Image (cartoon, rainbow, N blue to C red; front, side, top):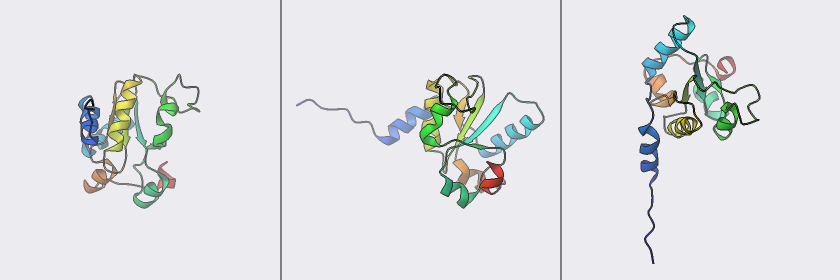
Length: 142
């Protein structure tokens, strides 16, 4: 009987993060501020959390919601299913979830699709809030 090689979720996460230049909450706040002043390339902050989580904790103002299950389809300009949400391959995409685990996997997938500047928010929305950064009700923020 041959031995099968098992990969743990921790190994998968390590592989996903190996290619990411993750951003912290303070850095993302600075990037978003620079974007307002037109000092940065196009930045898109994408919240992949489900509605219940966005209702519970709020959202980062200016972020957009794209569900985790359809993220690649909505952003890939060649998918045929972008429904006006397609990204330019040069866009700086910062994906966020609750704690920064699912977003790492999602950002790594986006990189595989050709979005070289895709990354995620280290610590997720919880890290953002712990740093004292503001959130708005999900209806107001997207």
